[in-house]
Image 1 (spheres, rainbow, N blue to C red):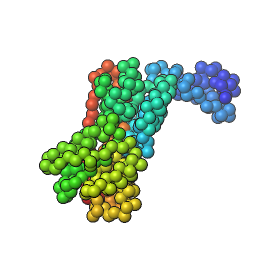
Image 2: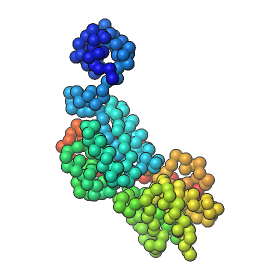
Image 3: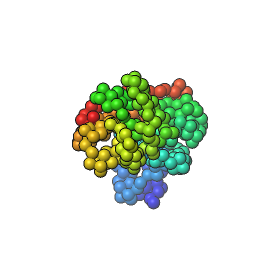
Image 4: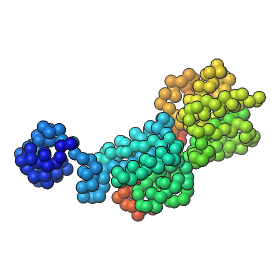
Length: 331
């Protein structure tokens, strides 16, 4: 690799001058700047980003970490977009890790991010008692949690009202005339899974409908479990009239099973999903779904993180955003 010293020699200036040009410092003679820029181009010099971050006077490295549990889920794609756009506007890069609900993988990413001296971290913890993330909070790293928080420490968190969103979805199904409604949730250790189950049960209680344990199923939050659990439910002697699915990927799995069985939506079985998808309107029929503001969650989380970096001693903030039930034709 070409060194700073070689660039300085080519331009006929000191190493310090080359460094000042690279860091866009003031008080550099325009002729000198041109010579340095020409030498950089001729030698195809690429600055060492790690060393550059370590030289920043304000202590910031211009790098934040973002750790999500499932990048296949379109909801998290929206969160990533919100974080990245906000960080870019503040001249920061984002180091993204996808740990796929694997705690060993999560630990690996966290160790790498620590070694890269990130300024702060935005994370959807693997569960409420996530010891790896908790230890980083206790060590003083600025952290904002998204979608779910931590029970052992106070920390900034941005989420939505999952219980109310689920209640609205199931109430709508009941109002449309469905009485036997199933809930297919994700991993039970994830707080959002249980909050959506609580909302489901709240709606049944309000309308005097029984809570049947046979109609409540938990999987691993992924497409395959959506397929299998829907198959199991539809094979019951008294199958459900409607499904409330707990996330995007579960919804896609449920739809695949329904279509494989040649069932018609909503005539044979209705479905409402938690998480809207940009292609929901293109499904046949278009999907009724609970919309979360994923981009807004990412944006607000990044804004809170930069504030936390600037004011590390400010009290933790819990920001809860609203969901919206998008009524289409699947029920």
